Image (cartoon, rainbow, N blue to C red):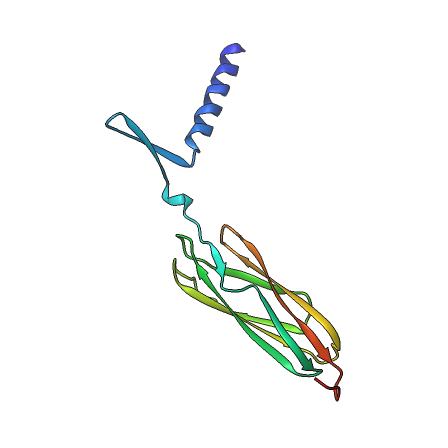
Length: 148
C-alpha cells in the first residue's frame, strides 16, 4: 500500500514538474530561464477605446473606425464582437493579425428611435492574453427636427 502511494505521488510530481512554462538552461554556472514557444500570446492594443459622436439628429447613422495593433508575439484572431443592442453593428478584420500588424473594427450606430443620451458598449472577444476588451460610443441623439 505504501509502495503504491509513493509511486502515485512520484508520478504526479513528475507530471506537474514536466508542465512548467519555463525552461532552464545552464551555461558557465549560470542558469537562465526562457519561455517555451507554446507560451507565445497575442496582445490586443487599441489606439483609442472611446468615441464621443457629439450631437446627431435622430435617424442619422454614426460610424467610427477603431484601430488596433497586435503587440504580442503570436497571431491575433478576433473571434466575436458583441454589442449592447441591434442599433450598433460591427464589422471587423477576419484574417489573423500578425505580431506588430494592425487591424480595424468599424462600428455603425443607427440613431433611429434613440433620442437622448446614448452609451453603446462593444465587447471584443479574441485569442489575445487580454481576451475581452470593451469599446464605447457615446453622445446625444436630438429628436428629429430638433436643433443641434
